[in-house]
Each structure stands twice: as structure tokens, then as C-alpha cells.
Length: 140
Image 1 (cartoon, rainbow, N blue to C red):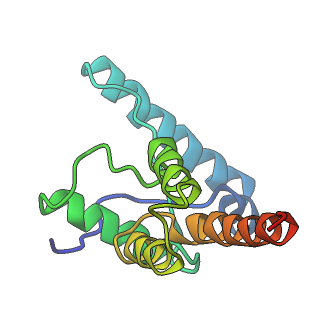
Image 2: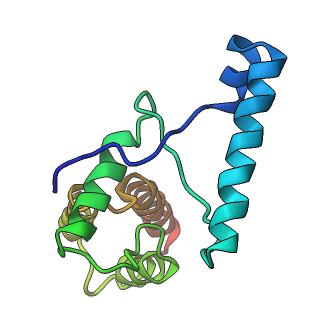
């Protein structure tokens, strides 16, 4: 996928800070006019997510979009999946199946594939600490 500029994004604070009121109001008026004409043309009032290039998630978001456009991921990418979190917790809780290496490999895979690996890594580390603390308290 080739990245292209398809949208004009102006931060509202920049309008207020860098343009006189008359020009600021004119841009707002034109944006409202485009919105009204889109609706009159039968199109929805579309909402957008904007990620600035100085945010740490900028490149990961681009990677997710590129994978989706190139057909490598479904449109319902589970980047914040409660089901995935629940599955990791179940794996972690099964002492007969779970090893630290397995958990670490799973979290590494999540990080490498655009999931919230850092979130799951902290859950896994908490599990390991709790498991070790529980084992120390168990009578032999």
C-alpha cells in the first residue's frame, strides 16, 4: 500500500492560535458547508480518527491500516480484544500447561503482530509475581 494524503486535518487549537477570528470562522463555515452537502448527497456524516506523527502509536497505526488494506487482516482487528485478554489469562492460570517461556513467547508474538503486547506483558508479569508469591505461602 502506498501512503497518500487523502484528508485535510487542521487542529482546532491551531485555527484559534494562528488565524484571526474572521479566517478561523470562515474555515469552520466551509467545513460545515461540505458536511451539509455530503448529507444532501446521501452520504453519512463521517467521523475520523487522527493520529499525529509525533505520537508513539503513529507507525503502529499505519502498519495496522496497511495490513488491512493489503488484505492481511480482517476489518475487525482485535487490537483491544477482551477475548484475547481472557484467553491469555486462562493460559496463564493453567499451571499444568503454562510455562514462563510460553507466556513470554506469546506476548512477544502479540507485540510483533500489532496487538497490545505491552498491556498483556504487564498482565503476565503480575500473574508470575502472584503465582510465585502463592507458591511461597503454600505448605509443603
